[in-house]
Amino acid sequence: MKILVINGPNLNMLGIREPDIYGRTTYADLCQMIEQHAQKIGAEVELYQSNHEGDLVDKIQEAYGIIDGIVINPGAYTHTSVAILDALKAVAIPAVEVHISEVDKREEFRQISYVRLACFATITGHGVNGYLEAMELIRERYES
Image (cartoon, rainbow, N blue to C red; front, side, top):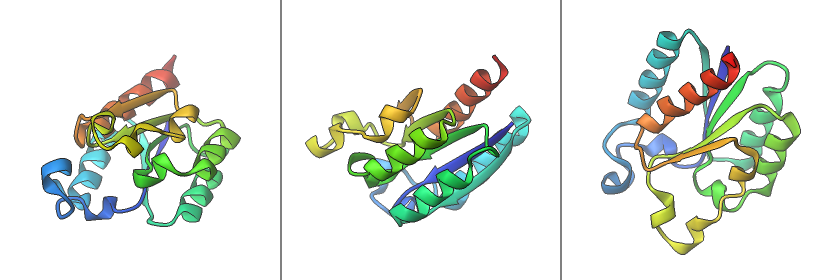
């Protein structure tokens, strides 16, 4: 099983950016956690982060026929990107949307998620552990 973990804009700033909302775990720490969990569940994992919408779309398209599941935290593009939604729909790879913070309890503009329309599950407000939960959901779906 191959899982692609995609992180959008500003997630490379974890541990620095608004630690009261996103915690003190750095992006490097998050990557290490994800790689260790992948090993534990017997999955191959590829990690990708970009601050550019088109790069995220390209990465999703490149996953077609290669990747079994996508964990995606599109960051601010969650609320604005029809392009990322369309890319996820085009490849039809099972995907889980993840947000470190509880976006449903934040600003009004964060209440809309275009990406969610192409995901079979969404995890919000579980901190960085939400990524591991998403990987488990993909594993369960892959094995069933």
